[in-house]
Length: 269
Image 1 (tube, rainbow, N blue to C red):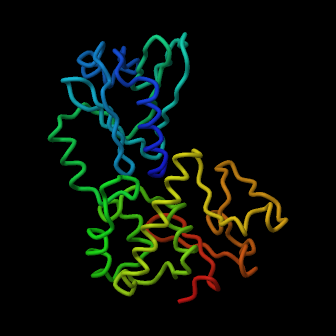
Image 2 (spheres, rainbow, N blue to C red):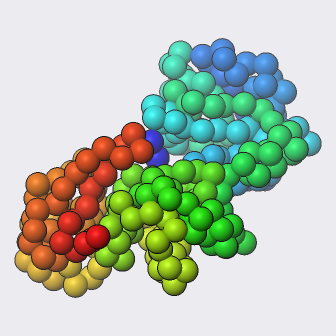
């Protein structure tokens, strides 16, 4: 499932390609046909992201709410657009660009009020300019649940996925099994600040890099990461490999229905 930086990047990409323009809207698959007919020819006048939720605003009509889920894909191209396949849930098209959405968990036309209700049930997002860590801290500081599980709870903090969870805890030397209530406020504020910086870099570069300059392949002489997901990381998907810092073995376990990765030496209990 894409992490929050990808969704914010998609919002920017839609604004760059379609904002202020009349857009042709269709649903070749047919599952969004009625709503597409209402939007067809309207001006796309906004794009918003909150956590893993994308919203595309259409003049005087509402918002298309998109959640990609595990299998959703959203891709762009330039015109002339190829004939859409019958797997395309939503196609946006103008004279220069097109965007195709396939396989989302959610693709629905919502009102301003329905959009606000989605925001209200989500936790603060480190990439949203006016969101602050206090509301998340209020829940984390009272919880006996592990910090690794809390970071994946979108009602507590929105946009953090498995990669950012593992990496930010490593970067701050925090045992992923530590209870939320055992964190200090200083530690939480440092995690929030770091997530915001890492995720902003993710938006800019369209990939996740979490390794500090002194630990990169160029600085240390180690081979670069060989992984389809790209990006230099400390522990994510590095189970049984040596830690970049201490040389100890990276461990993995199941936590909150996802694979957790950590270094027991650098993240001692």
